[in-house]
Image 1: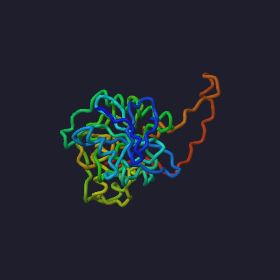
Image 2 (image 1 turned 45 degrees about the horizontal axis):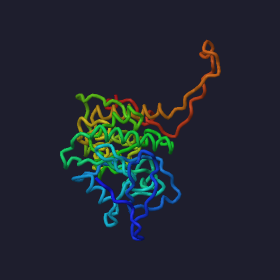
Image 3 (image 1 turned 180 degrees about the horizontal axis):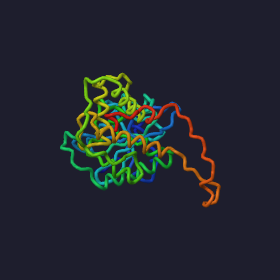
Image 4 (image 1 turned 120 degrees about the vertical axis):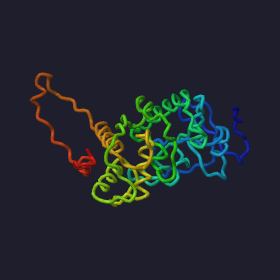
Length: 304
């Protein structure tokens, strides 16, 4: 695809310099706003779900569409920048994560050219994934974004969106340092919790999902919202079976994920004692936390 050079027509969107040397071309979109003093601390990954990358690019730059993203990653690994990172692109829509209700203001949106489920969900191209990893690592380094804050659109809008789809290689990204991921727990026979159930065990499940970041009220009723969040969790973290039912595998994967995030968040302790005397050092007091997965997950038949 050949992109037209920026026009001198005052009615066109002014061009800008890409935020990273990884950008192959800049194609300015008028669809953006002011971050109002907020700084991006998350990266949201999307798929375009359109017939072609060219069609997606036209839509992302169409003022009438009122949608955009900061970056568009093509199948061959080329990276186009559409909106400067300092601006608020319009990619997340109505969304929520970890207490934040305006994800557009605090995130950088990356669209991957991919037809999505409507187009048969073909595998993502290796060059495209490699470019996405490189771009995410660059943004994370420059903006001190932790791996756990690299999310899918389905995570922040679980009842509306399914991108970047169950076929997205999250494990490959995590192996490169992008995103939080653990090997999914095997699917086995056991309790299965689903729409219509209520009780303390459902309240605990909702609490764990909310601790991870999902926008979910703690009601102790497994309703449509809980089902949508469980389905989104499965799509990202346990894609072998996406049915919105909280089975043993889903719950064990959720617990392992929270444990992995907790371990990643803990600062590394460096002893000032020689190695042979380190075991005699007084152990520091355990820090107090307002809430944790452990305190909200008492042992029981469905959690173990």
